[in-house]
Length: 231
Image: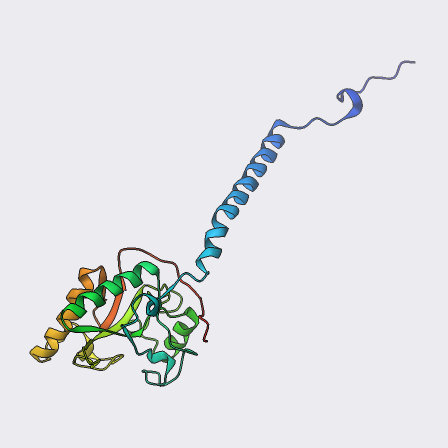
């Protein structure tokens, strides 16, 4: 007797048919993988380049700028040596702007003295551990303009290298260091105004709480962990 024919059927060759939906899923997965690969290759290289040695030693382009790198000594607010040696590194464009400020002041019989320039991020953490106050030390997670090679702590000196009176010492944390403090003499106010107006004319900006701190505002930079060599 003839056997009843099964109601199910299979394609020629006995293979399984692929659902159109399943095919679309595979296509989407492949596209997502390709996008992720392109994203990784496109953005990975610049990130690596940001960590390279991309700073300019100010001594190479403006050797007459006086350097008193306080964090390479114990003469600072944490009373601890933070740098193995004192060097002033900045982004090239920032260094050129600072050199221009120095040149302007030299015409008037003055010059610049720098206290701090580029600051490696690990040093920022040490400072924050000592003074966890965002009014004076930028939180390391955010990163400061110093960590980007775009900030300078500085003052003005006369032709003999003597600092002009700015009302307080560098790294004085109190109202007398604020730009808004009104209790200083006319001489101190004039000295601060000279520094502030000259820096701002070349593209730097100040912060309210520190008369000595200026950052470059014409360009943005990434945080760097570069540690310089001591020779």
